[in-house]
Amino acid sequence: MSIGPRLQSKVAIVTGGASGIGAETARLFAAHGATVVLCDVQDDLGHAVAREITDAGGIAEYFRHDVTSEDQWIARAAATEAKYGKINILGNIAGISGRPAGMTVQTGATAGAKLLDQTLENWNHIMEVNATGVFLGTKSVIPAMQRAGGGSIINISSICGIVGSFANAAYHASKGAVRIFSKSAAIQYAADQVRVNSVHPGFVDTPMARPGLIGNESGKARMDATPMGRFGKPIDIANGCLFLASDESSWMTGAELVIDGGMTAN
Ligand SMILES: NC(=O)c1ccc[n+]([C@@H]2O[C@H](COP(=O)([O-])OP(=O)(O)OC[C@H]3O[C@@H](n4cnc5c(N)ncnc54)[C@H](O)[C@@H]3O)[C@@H](O)[C@H]2O)c1
Image (tube, rainbow, N blue to C red):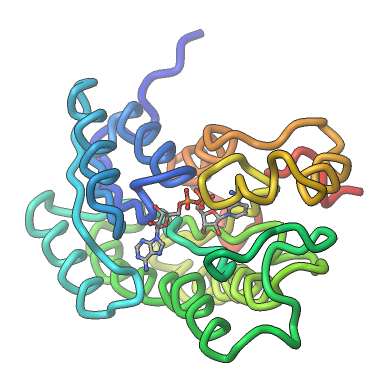
C-alpha cells in the first residue's frame, strides 16, 4: 500500500524553520504537499532551507520573524492568509536552551545555570522565547483557522516540560508552560476544530542540544538514561509533527506526544 501526500493543499507556518527540528519539519511538511512559511531569526540558514525545499519541487518561503514580537506575528498571519488564502497548520518549534554563552555543559548533568546562579534576565528571556512565543503564535493564527474551518497547532515542549532535572529550571518551566497552555488552548477552541497538541522530544542531536550530548560526561549520562540507546534525530520529531498536522490525528487535541527513545517511561 502506498501512502500519498498527507498535507496536500494545506498551508503551514513553521517557526524555528532555519535549523534542527524546525528545518526538518518544514522539509517533511513540504514533501507531503504543504505550502510552508518558515520563520526564524537565522536568515542565511532559513533562506537555505526554503531554497532546498523549492529546488526539490516544494513550495516554501522564509521570513525573518522573531517569535517574541506580537506585531510580527500579526503581520505574518495576515500576510500568509492574504497570499495563500488560509492557514491550516502552525508548528511552534522555535526555542532556546537559555544556556549562557560560554557556559560549559560540564557540571554533572546540568544544561544551564543552577537556580541560585540563574538571573532574572536569563529567566525572562527563556520564558519570552519558549513560552510567550508559543502563546503569541497560537493567538495570532486561531482567527484564520476558524475562518478555514479548523486547523492544527503543534507546540514543541520537551520531556523537560513533563519531568524536572538538575538542569536549567527556567527551561523546564518554559516547557511546562507550553504543555499546559496547549491543553487550555485546545479546550477553548475545540468546538472550532482548531486542534492544539504538544510534542515532547527527548535528547535530539541538533545545534542547540549537541554541546550537552557529544563528547562529555553530560552526554554519557543522557545516553545512559535513553533506553533505546541512541539520541533522537530531527526526523524522529518531524514525523510526530507530520502526524499531528495531518487529518490522521483529526480527533486528537490537548494531547502530549512524547518522542524520547523511552526516557520518561523509565
Ligand atoms: N534538541 C533537543 O534535544 C530538544 C529536546 C526537547 C525539545 N527541544 C525543542 O525543540 C525546538 C527546536 O530546537 P532544536 O533542538 O531544533 O534547536 P535549534 O537551535 O537547531 O533550532 C531552534 C531554532 O529556533 C530559532 N529561534 C530562537 N529564538 C528565536 C526567536 N526569538 N524567533 C524566531 N526563531 C528563534 C533559532 O534561530 C533556531 O533556528 C526548541 O523549542 C527546543 O526547545 C529540543
